[in-house]
Image (tube, rainbow, N blue to C red):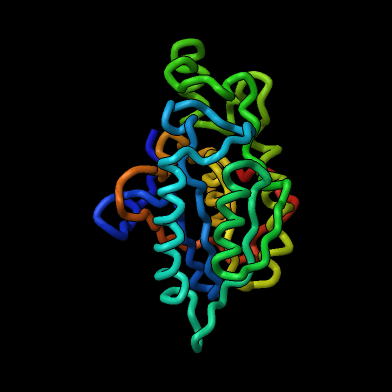
Length: 240
């Protein structure tokens, strides 16, 4: 099932830094959605979910590349009269998202706030398993979850509708300020945040096409237009 999204725009020769950058033209508000760098689970192709893990050595190297890329991107895209319009960063409470957000906040002097509502989706019994193991043990369920995550809940996992509600509630106050901010969140939560900001129908989400690559020497930046903040209902259920 195809998500129908436009191809991402790339900076650099290859893809490394897993972050998305959002541009809302009508509201003149910009957002950075940053995905944390690699852990051992990424390298082993395991499902992490809510399990806290440190960055692996490759992830530490990716973090340094991320910081260098932000050194260029922030003043170029968010600079105004020699000052950055960015001064806030919100993070999921999971590791390594929280540590990555801390390093970014420290580098730029931004205010850092941890939001429990941005915690990664609880993937239940699938957490810790290699994706090939899940495909072998739950072939139909795993395929359906990737292609139609709103219609499938992993065994002992969290329904997408519950995650959608807590994301919308958590981002209510930041969006009301109508000023740029940064969000650091892991997959699949990051894709859910992206869909919420753009008022996409989660029924059209395809997690198998999540825009993440964690190797190479460039950076992945996808420019999109989120919905106007006035259209974001913080207590809304999944759109149908």
